[in-house]
Amino acid sequence: MTRPWITACGLVATLAAGVRFSPPSSRAPRTASDSTTVVFLGTGTPRPDPTTMGPATAIVVGSRTFLFDAGVGVTRRFTAARIPLPSIAGVFFTHLHSDHTLGYPDLIFTTWTMGRHAPFPVYGPHGLAAMTDAIYSAWREDIGIRSKGLEHLPATGYRVTVHEIAPGVAFDSGGVRITAIPVLHGSWKEAYGYRIDTPDRSIVISGDTRPASSIEQAARGVDILIHEVHPASVETAAEGGGRQDWARYLREFHTNDVALGKLAAAAHPKTLVLYHFGAHGTADDEVIATIRAQGFSGRIVVAKDLDRL
Ligand SMILES: [Zn+2]
Ligand SMILES: [Zn+2]
Image 1 (cartoon, protein in one colour):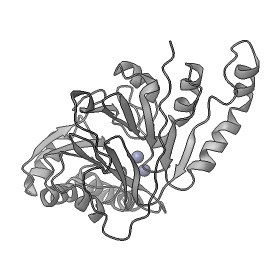
Image 2 (cartoon, helix red, strand yellow; image 1 turned 180 degrees about the horizontal axis):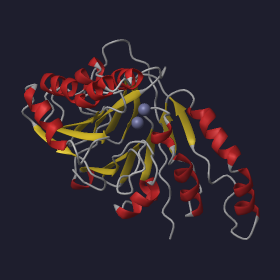
Image 3 (tube, helix red, strand yellow; image 1 turned 60 degrees about the horizontal axis):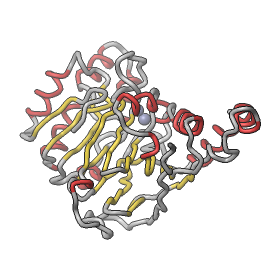
């Protein structure tokens, strides 16, 4: 039996400077079924590591799944994590870099071939609508064959509802509020982190960013801060090896362990999760020690694919 796809109407609001984070306005009475689980479907980087899929983080609240980014391997990771694809209540892109969006066509078409017949909402920066239209166009022959041929798939069942967002509340329904936080990702004009407030948890996801005061402010006292990181030693090595542009790229687009330690010490989330961590497995101890040295005393977790929190 095909479960109905959950669709939700997202509200987009632009907030002036100083985004405030309060409990969701439509907070439903808390029940056991509202409990929140973070599932790391993909924690990787562009590197095609066979054990680590592209960035994709599922926040499951009761029967609803909110997905943040869709890197390579995303729908297969849903299966591995035993999260039903029809539970997707919204997909939120931090930015449109390929490593965060290569699984977007997979989400669109695999869900359709697996029985989806209604749109799910997708949120992200400007450019997401054009990317979505380009994906439909790139697969138009597939769409024709599957809908007009022997598979009889519903003709418009592959479509999604795109919301190009602005800083502020992007979604607020059924006790879940999702707020887009502008971040600083090098020359990208628009990139976001997200704060997710559910009936039982507060969570911030950095997306890709250099150290951002907006994230520090949003993450003050939250239960979980999920943040990208690389060792500062990689920057030093790049400079020493004459790769000045690579060192500059890292500083302008991403966050090193020294800066993240300072940010975490100031924001003091209960748990700091490291993801999108290029050197994971080889520099875990170095990065954790560096973060500790900046004064962060909370729990630190290095996320691996399919970890749950
Ligand atoms: Zn990335
Ligand atoms: Zn990026």
